Image 1 (cartoon, rainbow, N blue to C red):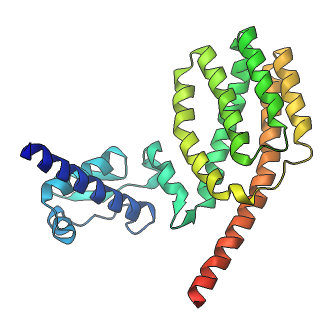
Image 2: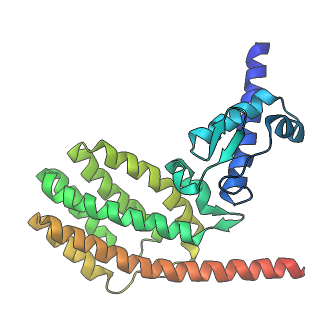
Image 3: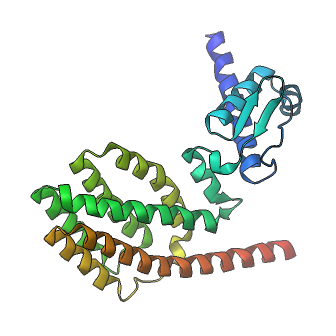
Length: 253
């Protein structure tokens, strides 16, 4: 029992150390090529044993954030070599979010959606296609907020991935969805109603699904994404202006 308690404390220390160092690396406090402090120094600074520090550094190595070299310590790697698992951490910025990261995540997500749409019309059964078209019809409903809109889009991807047995598509969806949801929850209150011409793009996607036309489906998805991004840009502008005002008010208090 005592051994389990010791092991549990070590894991908690390890996770805390790894989280702190991960934050320092992602925010540029340690730059690519720079050596992290030695295990002994980190252990002393954080009042833990060197074993906890060693395990924390292994976590960072698994994430692709550092390279551990025997006799040379842990060197910070370029961020573009990091694991996709750090995207959610990159999205956070203090009490807000990183706009550039969210926009880049959505760029990749648009590519994923366009491919999923083409996959859907080629591989879906008639029953699955009917379910997909029902979801598409809901995309143009004005009362749905940004998060509801995204969740319906994700449900469409899931239908395509499930029906086709596309394992990698589902893994990518699971990877990006938490980061996108984090971002949309943060800026959700700043979204206005749907763009007036979104309905036209939604109808084009439904027609492409009905005709089982892959290229037309991909084009319609990109059109929907383009219109949704206009609304996203406005929401991000309002979000950043509000947070800038809050920070200024706090600094003057």
